[in-house]
Length: 108
Image (cartoon, rainbow, N blue to C red; front, side, top):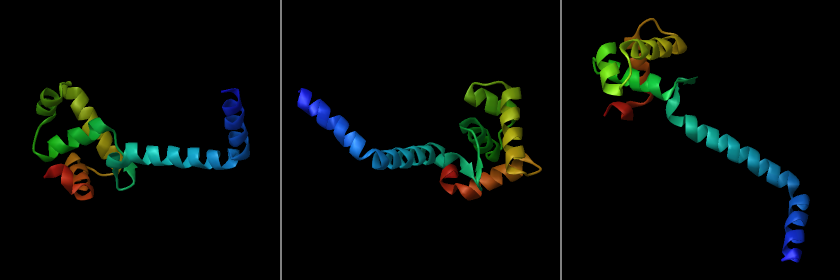
């Protein structure tokens, strides 16, 4: 058992650069996977912002979105407006269209 322990640390010392690169690539891949569905035209949106925009695209008001998601009307309006600002558009409708065009599968 003690010999295996020594061998393990010897291998780590020998391949420390390779292990560091593997860790960096793993981290980048994990970050990309976690944010994959949240990037719209290069802009990162929160899960809640996307949910609110999806419901807005279906014609739901902030009050209705709040009821559906279990949040207040003000919070739903905040998320829609925040997404609109992040995407650099004038209206929530424009933000919802940008989301729909970037992720058509969200709306089918």
